[in-house]
Amino acid sequence: MSEEKPNQPKLPPTSALDNPSSHVFENWFEYPIRVQPHHTDYAGNVWHGSYLAWMEEARVECLRSIGIEFSDLVALGCDLPVVELSVRYHRSILLGMAAVVKTRMAEVTGVRIDWDYAIVSTDRQQLYVTAKVTLVALDRERGKIMRQLPPSFKDALVKISALNT
Image (cartoon, rainbow, N blue to C red; front, side):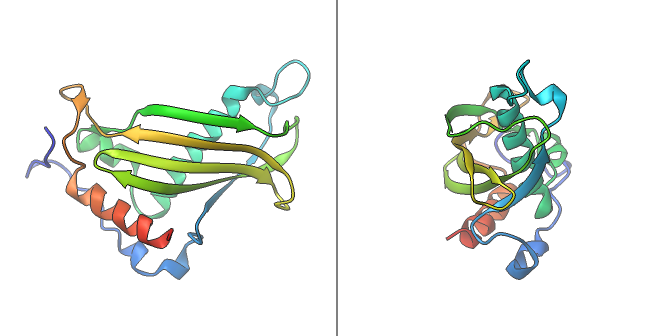
């Protein structure tokens, strides 16, 4: 169902967003990573799929930082699968290196949510990856695209969007 049911859990309040200075939302949420052996190929270069995992971790942590747990979305019956992905690899990251995954919600159109990414060196001087991801809200029970986002989630996304302009 596309609407919240009265007996379903609600997302926690997003009062953390009422004070933007308490977050690093100056356009980007930053998520630090360090390359471990399981992230690399035989030559010590980061495997392309590791970048995707880091981007998802950053997106989930960005939502968590404003009080939205992914498990709460699941409890609301909402899933957010990736429906479109575009990645540009600019430079390799090597085993043992640290980097920062920067993400921001770019746009919400109906039930489509677009996110931007940049993976950079810790000193912000090297650009490793840029990417765009589009998610769509899916009704987990019916397995169909929702007609609208759950109201509490939509309200939180509107607040994030306002911080990123």
